[in-house]
Length: 418
Image (cartoon, rainbow, N blue to C red; front, side):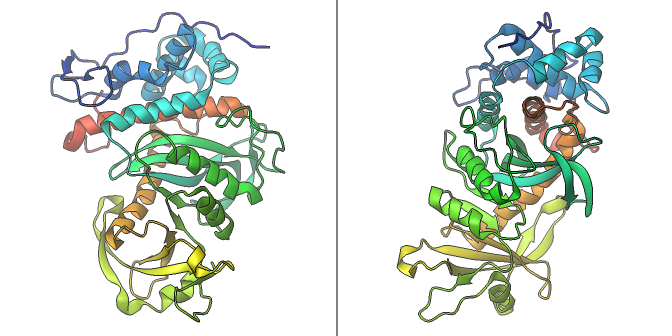
């Protein structure tokens, strides 16, 4: 039985707080003019939302759903502290709408995947991504009633806690990143049922042994979006990289994957013995090149090298596509970070630049948690979780677009004009 979402009523006008003038229309497929700019030439997030927000939600069938979506995103952008449905309703001046927001996110039957794709398309008109970055994150929870909650290890804080394991796909480029897709990893055995469609996995029961399949599916969905094929940068720190490697190669996806130190490799030479990233990179100190890292807003020097390699998986060398092993380290004696790629046409500095997108994406994730309430969903269902994450992703895309407009005039505290 399909449940209708109560109308939220007319959406209040979302303004930038200042009189705005339209800028000339940019090149590309967008039918709208550039976002309205304030008198000083800078558009805040709310101005961008007024301009581009309706384009995010054209897939929603009903006008009340589209109004609710824009109003919810507006509340995510402006609500201080925890961004619950109640707090968002209070911020947008409709305290009685808290229950309606709850219904819109948790019950109203709208598909989040077309919205995510629309957000990525809209952002790509202003800043095309250089790569798709896939990372795993932990969402702490105070109880066990929400979907996907379990006792899990949080590598960011080095401790075990109660929470959700989440895979995020980000459209990333230097200095810029927005969420493109999400997957909630469920504890327990994989669900044998086929998902209702290729994108919205409403029963995401996925054991840890199924992680390679999930990552490959997310990566395939990202790469096959319209436009040029962008590489996957996968930074998951897996204990065993081989199963994921096999799936990525079977799908023909372009990838740069952080690999475990014990992965079985061999060099493409007759009679070469099996080796590992740890052994191969441990013997190449004389071949290290100096590279400049820009992570964390400061310039530091890292040392890097690459080696042509093959997988030691029983296949003849002539049947294997070429691969390169990338090693990066902070000093000559520091343990190297090992990455494996089929992007053999890229130079060492270009590969290093792709790895830096992973660090940048981690910073963007923490920024999104604070600014748009990425981890603030208080409901219990997986569907509601996906819809909140989708709306929060749209809100963060709006802040990113405002950042492009602000450019070097971004405030010292990292806040955008509004």
